[in-house]
Amino acid sequence: MSSIGLEPRDMEWLEKGVLGIHWNDGHKGVYPVRVLRQQCPCAACVDEWTGERRLKGEEVPLLIMLMDVQPVGRYALQFIWSDGHDSGIYSYALLRTLCQCEICRPVKQAEPRSRRLM
Ligand SMILES: [Zn+2]
Ligand SMILES: [Zn+2]
Image 1 (cartoon, protein in one colour):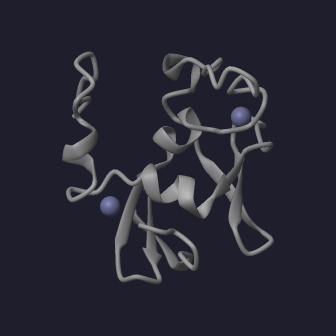
Image 2 (image 1 turned 90 degrees about the horizontal axis):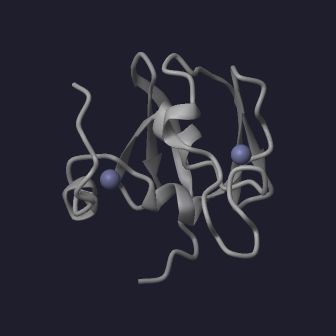
């Protein structure tokens, strides 16, 4: 399936620390901000050549906050974080794959060592 033309139509806080993104195809994305921060795609967090993730999940503060969101062209969003990090450009296609909603999430729960912190 092509992701061309996919873009966020609206954003809102679903609850504290959980960003909701309404996509133009009608999907309502659910994004706990800490997950977004952990998945930051910038060169400091991911090795550009190997694709290896340098940022470890537990290095992200538990109470990370999203301070600001800036649109980047018509293809991505830049998030400004409370830990001072702001170099991650999240393309819409990437954002869509990071969705943690009930529909998207079961598919990605294959990782055996992921634990729920509820
Ligand atoms: Zn980063
Ligand atoms: Zn979803």
